Image (cartoon, rainbow, N blue to C red; front, side):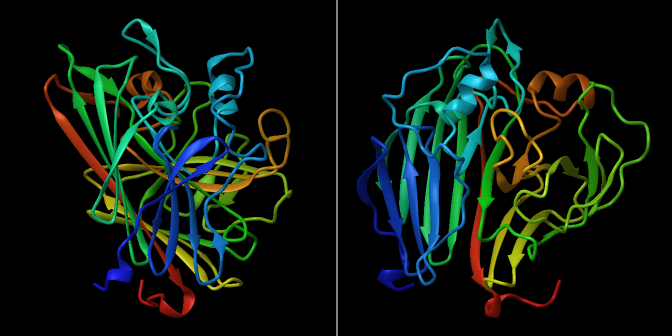
Length: 336
């Protein structure tokens, strides 16, 4: 590996947050340690194309005053998009062990301290509402970014969690020409009424929405077309899971890869203007493919509806990682 191929950390300020830059020959990666250790930006240098999605209000400064509201609203107000860590809860707020864990959990809003490591940055925080110390490492080498998360249980009793990485992608990668490929799997629907479905789940890419409409998850829509999808992928055929998002019009493909043992599920969230009320008001156009320890959203619901909560014992450290590659179309492997 050449010296230029390894990430060179730099520091700047973005919206009042300290931002750590990891630069390779292929990518410019921006990490915000003070806000959940988020990967805020991944930009391909040769095309200057931003791959991650940012909501319409952008990354709000740390001095922004909180507005009144329920936990989901308060958390979404602070969302800056990008690639987040959802732990110890993912999705719906859940009251656990005498405290509200909040929408998407605490980690994505927690302040991390950081230090440079080879090709990247290592960040650490102690959570306040659950007995975990979280260490998060972001490494960028050539055309790949790897996010590794380790959680150390420092409490005295077993704790159930729902753990999810949340990379959200936006235009121009996401568009009507975009296709999505995923390692063979089944597709579980959402359960908005907390009633598990009785039919056997279909195989990828077939999906039935809660309104009983049939959807091909491998195809996306134009911005503003009024779509909204939520599905949960599981029972992957292979030990190593791959998810590819390819837009031939711009000649780019993003590939996510992870171990099925680490994350046996993946959440599929897509908005093309379907949610007309808060928070998107019809403006969001984003696809998130989210490696996850369980489903559906909210650790209580994962425990009660599917039995897919992850129990971490006292004194244990658990580590999971996801790698993202950015590939020009001419470099993609035509073999599936």
